[in-house]
Figure 1 (tube, rainbow, N blue to C red):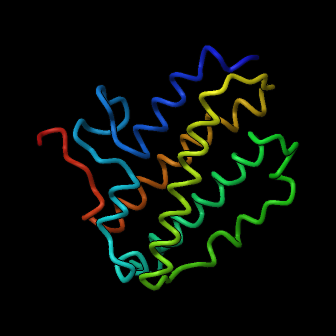
Figure 2 (figure 1 turned 135 degrees about the vertical axis):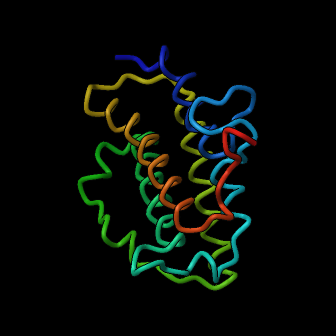
Length: 161
C-alpha cells in the first residue's frame, strides 16, 4: 500500500496531538495547545513528580521521544530499528533538572516534528508497517492522556470552555 491517500489524515491527527488543532479538532477540544506547549507549562520539579508510585511526566516524555526516534529511523531507511529497541530503558529517566527538562522537551519536539514531516511523504508500506505508523499516533495520544492525568496544568480546555 502507498500511504499517499492517508498522509494528510495521519499528519492532521498527529499534528493536532503535538501542536493543537489548527482549524478543526478531531481528537482534542478546540483551543487545546497540544502536548508540546502543555509540557512547556511544567517545571522540572513538576515533570519529576510521581503520583502514587506511578510514572513521571519526564518518564513519559522520554518514552515518547524514544519511540518517535525509532519511527524516524525507520522512515529514514533503517529496515527494522525495533528489533534492538530497549523500551524499558526509555522509562529509566524519572527525574530531571531544569536543564535536562529543557533538553528533553527540545529533543521530543524535534523528533515529533521530524516524524510529522516524514508522514507527509508518501511511501510504500506493508500491513505491519502501516499498523506501526497508525499505532505511533495512538501511542502518543495514550501518553498525552496519561500526562494530563498526572498534572492538571497540562490539560486542555473542556468541551464546555
